[in-house]
Image (cartoon, rainbow, N blue to C red):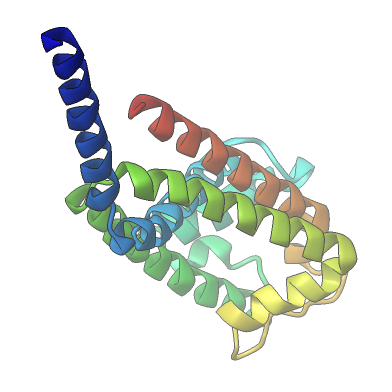
Length: 202
């Protein structure tokens, strides 16, 4: 009888512990998945970008590629390093640099939130968010690559000035397939980071 009571008590304690764990998960644990996902995506973006900046690209124009990448990411790079661009291309690079600066600040902000409020549930939720964004981006690109490209630029560059002729330096250096490969690499790195974070906290 005593053994039976002890077994029953253990089951009750285990059940109570499970319920307590379930009650310990709040709605904001899931909401935190959003900043977690954004921090991971932005971190993946900068990782891929810095790798792309170091790789030789552009054939005979590899020096131009490196100067553009340096101008976008290194504060001490003077604008005259990209003086080979046409005025409208140069103006667009100035807009891109502003977006880069704000993107880096945003990364630090969301990374800070993720560190201040650590949550296993948020990490798992972020995996679903990143996967969903990747699928939506892929499907929209397959349906209309031009439409997706236009939508992206209208969000980040509403002032315009991002359409150039095919023979322009920017289009020659960075055709559409370059950005498609870049996007795939970003999502790939983001998935790896998410997997490592969730595996580490199992």
